[in-house]
Image (cartoon, rainbow, N blue to C red):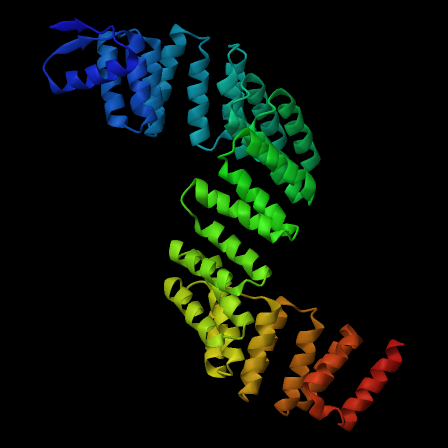
Length: 466
């Protein structure tokens, strides 16, 4: 038997699902089917959406909208040829339906033909006055093409249509930031706020831009207005706290971070920032308490482990620092920052073998910072492995060929290894690079200051450089 469905859309969904479980056949308007299909597709229930399309087309075989929804599913499933054939059929029926061009653009976009997608969307734009969605799609295509200027203009049109379209508002600001037009972003947001003075999202975005420009007082004002607009807006409290922290107003920063915790479940990031503020205030016990809470809340947050490691290192409590950095390494042994911290701690503990191993791990995992090469070479020098120290310095010079400090150190280690000719060459090279840093060599290798050839070399180069 066929029953009529004159219910509200949500009732239509429950009736449709009831129909699937029974032998009854219910009749739905084409609009009802559209609502049902959109519901399933929006909630990721593709199989139910396809079932609704099938039954809908059985009841309404001439419905253009239902056929377009079928195209949408075909595109989602990457069945482009079938979708294109169906679109060709539909275009013979209605050559001026903008949705046909939108679906064709979707197909081109999914195949990375973004310029062709733009061309199709521009055609669709000429066919309709209700072009909000098309401008949004155009904006995304321009983003794919890295054309941030055109993307910005498209998303600005979306915001003109709907001030509450925060997704487009975020995208406009993103484009301004990518173009490094921060003043333009400020102007845009201020204009928007003239129309929407209680938009916490716009105030929040404005504050973040002021913060990036180091306009801290303006940033504070913006975040205050965001909080006035929505006193439960966690992001505004957090960003305001960061500004206060930057200004050295640590107690006020702590209050705002604590507000975020009182509004919602505490986060490791909030605990970490509070811990850092207490450390700056000299409240070591409280700093330690919040750092411990940071790693308890999120054991995978590397900044938490590094903060608690650095905290103990500053207090020269190296055994505790080593304990925490080793816990971090056990969690993520592929993190070069952990290994570098570990090496520094072992060096402080005069455990040179472990420091050597840790520096090697850090370099193998991609840490090529200047101080890594210098400190690793120093560790090897301390254990008397001059050959390996030389190899490390030579490798470091591949990354920093113009660094005089590396060359001076290499000259000194060559001398320690009795490679006098190499030492002379490198020392002359270093002095030509930066004669002022000769003092570093003299402080690090004082035992060679009275060597005759070395004093003569220094004297000659100083004469030529004056």
